[in-house]
Length: 636
Ligand code: GLU
Ligand code: MG
Image 1 (cartoon, rainbow, N blue to C red):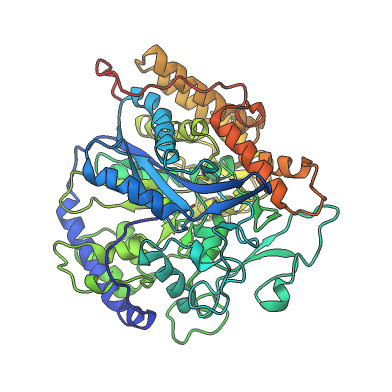
Image 2: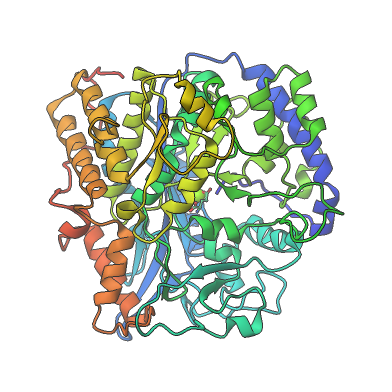
């Protein structure tokens, strides 16, 4: 979720009064970082993954599954290990928003050698095992994107009750005890987002309509005017930030390469969201969406009514189209500039200051745009800073802009270079799937850089794709805007005409076409070569040992099959499991027993005790190694 500063949180009133202070100093801090590090070069490719997990408790006697609120217990042990031997640990553990979540990363980043692909999965397994060893016999660490009965009565262990009249979430469903309390940041965000917005957050997910589905879904609409009767109503940050994802971070060789990667991966974010779709059930109901994205977006939407365009602007400066958790609004590379076709809001004085300090238009507008958001979490110890050395005010705003991509400057006084984070993917059930996806995306970045490919499409089209990506069965059924000619930077005149404004007609033009996930990944004859064929041709030119080759091929085969629809996304698998369960009443309800059986089934799949060709295909788990053989020198 981002960085954790120590200390005492300020009240919302105090935080609000210091918003301008944070903005001013955050911008200065970025200018200082940029001045010192813009010329930094010669960094090598390094990368790492992040996986978030839910701690699940199985109650076999009553056939119920709960989220176990034991993240703090686990983290205190895991973090002690890290403190005792910071260089020796093979994984790093961090708190996440919920008291039932933990986040794990490899202890050290991977490097630019193909042989690293052979250790990704074993590191994920090792990580899972390390955390699992601290669990009670009836608990399990699960990399599921959403706990299907999150927010249902008694969904936590120990049992807790929501406090609609309290000072925290004020949720009808999500208890404050389910928010991680080992650090004040999380509850502080909950409060401040609610206070800034001026009311509860509200998410209405269309219910999946089966033949016995009841409308209204429940009584929420009688209690809250924001609740829509035909939707599953969610009213707390925890419904979103309590979901899990799979993220990737890349270190680029310099700032220019980081900008290129940021841009080129942007059009892939909706494709990979649809491909990794894993969250069809919310608060005990099947919904008509397959992904968490809009749920999290709504769950941290701190915009006031004025900013949401519901009231004329008086107190606030802008009507803002998106939440602070959303898709990016602009490309950063020179190549990307002409595809920046949506409104990019910023304070003129912030932009000016950045420009006056030698920062180019694209980067200045990006940073100034991030800073239209006020701080929603400030600690008393961090108010006054040395802008030459500290970067907390910059990071404060940067780390609470949760977007599909993140452009990350090097931390001060570190050996780390300019980085880019790919944030769209949903967490997959098995380490095999997570490893396959991670390796695939890393390979795609190598293909982009070595063949100098161009995937850019107008950013408005990326936004459209991101919405379509979340629809039920999108991976198989939806079509997405994708660039047809990826080998050229020069777009034909018709394409320029077509894409000059925000209003491209929804038909094929020479630059972009509508493609399915299958066509993007496996290719569309005569139109688009496909990401897998591109990766394969890249790999053909590489010297790779037989074992690594075999691992990579298994991963690629899995990606190919899922994209073609031969195997299911986790979202489709979950839907199928629920609707075929003997206890299912065709009423969209994921009952306790269905939830229990489903999670048990997913646990068995993860542990490999019961094969699941529907989800994983015929692919067997790859033979993974613990260590990279030093003799291998196939750098890429
Ligand atoms: N859990 C959030 C998600 O699913 C991400 C939080 C983070 O930035 O680490 O997207
Ligand atoms: Mg996280």
